[in-house]
Image (cartoon, rainbow, N blue to C red):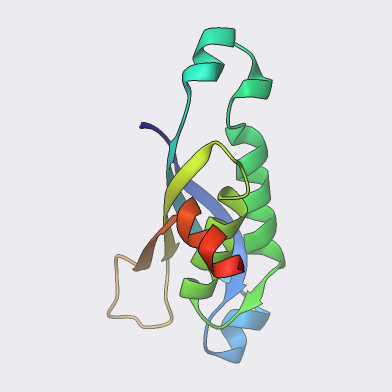
Length: 126
């Protein structure tokens, strides 16, 4: 299976346990790695046959900017669900990073990583 990845999609989001994190917001970053079939797009050289990463990036940013959530796990789940709507995507790994969490000792950020597959999404909707 082929892979398409987009790294360091950054935006100002509102995700956190504290009221300030959800009100004021903070810098968040998302990485996605998708297992998808790129053969049709490669043969045709047509965007319509490909996973449109420009459009997908816009959707991820929209989810991140518009959500008011307590947990980055929830944000990761919403991003994964959006990505798996594309029939060409078999599975996705999503990493959401709080770039500057509200704890001064944490200098490198906090990251959650989830892996979801299209088969799991189909089963959970039955």
